Image 1 (tube, rainbow over the protein chains, first blue to last red):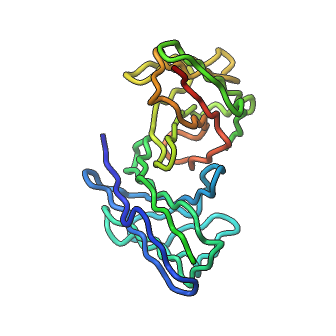
Image 2 (image 1 turned 45 degrees about the horizontal axis):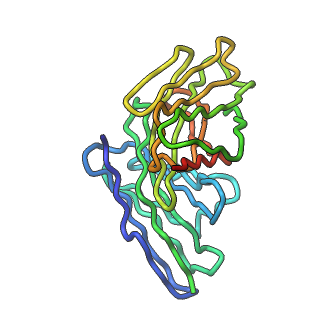
Length: 115
Length: 110
């Protein structure tokens, strides 16, 4: 099956700093990538959808200037959490799909802790 | 996208079949039923999807009622590794967003 990786798997950063999370499709071309956030004991919440070469579409309530998404190639998307605060601590998960395919493949997630 | 309703939790004995129900009474004609699962602290894993016919793959079977208002995911021989949160999602085939509800926590016990 298709594989999606995320890096790093865990990151701890200080309040006020920015952190970048990478999402890569290893064996297929991802025309669309999605970013989710999951707080403890809660379900996944879609943050944004990005198509390769286009600006990301953010879900209602998600600050686009705080969560910068770049999908510059068919195998890589990045999420940058700018000026992170403790309330941004969460499990961030990406997923990817190819055009016309119904299946969406998920990465293993990145645990962000802001101190 | 249509909403789904699932029981919050279920228990199943190891080796027995696990039957996970899902209600999706407002499903539209062009919406598919998808099942994903999430093992603790991992990304979701695709299980199966279907439109109106029953489907089976190496992981599970999906039974969809004739009126398409509900479905059941069947894990034929549950193992301890099947303990996870199972999400039932309905969406348009290739373009709809995957919107995750609360899911069902399945605990497989020895």
